[in-house]
Structure formats: structure tokens, C-alpha cells
Length: 116
Image (cartoon, rainbow, N blue to C red; front, top):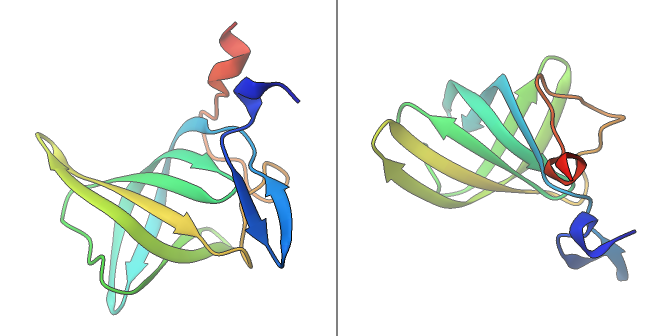
């Protein structure tokens, strides 16, 4: 695995694990934060996180989950920033619900490392 394919090292269940590359994508998903749910656009995804574009500010105080059809990813929002067209939220996925291309492939998925 090359340096470009490794985004970070983390610990899961007491052992070191390498994160997969970050993938660009564009896929509508449901973001649930507490009692509030909204349709948002999944913009990036990697083994331990995701970036979402939201029209309304998501509640970043507590647990959050992304639902993609029958697949659910749990975690928490770690950063929410307002921009010209809405809100950008970064979500840290729980080690119990990591993302992998085998588990869920978002629409328009692209690994920027494949571009050369």
C-alpha cells in the first residue's frame, strides 16, 4: 500500500489499523441527529469517516447516523461549517460500523489516487 492510499492510522479494539483512501462521491443519504432527520448529500467517504453537504445546520451535539437504503453507519459529527450554499459536516464513524466498498458503494464513487 502506498502513502497516497493511507490517510491515517488508528486503533480499533486495541490493535493498529490503517484507514483506506478517501473516496469522492455524490449520493443522497439520510442523516439522523437525535430526533431530526434530513436528506443530505454524501460527498466523501473513507473507512472511519464521511463528509456531508446539508441544506440546514445539523445538530452536532450527540450521536449521528447515516442511512443508505438498508445500510446504517453510526458515529458522531466532529465538525460543522457553514458555507455559501449550506453546511458541510464531517462525521467520524463508529469502529462498529466502518465503511468499505464491499459494504456500500455510493453513486459516482471516485478514488482521486486513480487519477494519477
